[in-house]
Image (cartoon, rainbow, N blue to C red; front, side):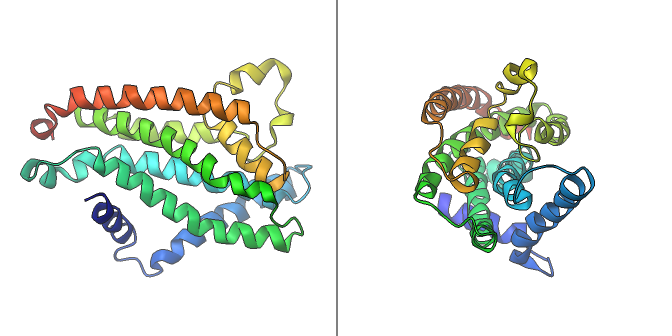
Length: 245
């Protein structure tokens, strides 16, 4: 069922669209162009190969934010299925996470091309990509499991999430390197769970060095604990889900 739901999500995401799957490439490229123009040309961000630096962090963020935003109301959108058929409810948000990851992998084709065009290329450290993606997926699934369950009872969460992810973007070192964060604010920014993930991607693709394994290990442990909590909360809220939607 997970495979069929993931396939359905992929098809429905671009159903009726003129460009279809091309949007997977067009959206990140359009955003890359806008941010590069603003921060590199207008605001003079002093980062070598800034467009590549930006794209390395932008791609995983787009995956994360799009998955979170589209997953919050996933139980409500699939209310007919939930009311008619009993199945593990967590399949729906998990399929959405997998769909986001597939789109992310499509975007990686553009990133790899950009790395070679810019003269950076790929290094052996790129082999750590699957590990970082798995850790990111644990965090994403934990968050969407919590939010999608709560949205059944509190519909405003879907709108609040859209606003918070927009703000969250600017508190994540994507359009600027983490070295520009003032020392007195470092501890606040370190509370951002997405920041070490983005930094790890920047390390292996842009800086071409080993990621901070200590930081990734801490993230993996915390995200796994969060996922256990998400499952517990989902199990509690799942009992009345069919009647609430």
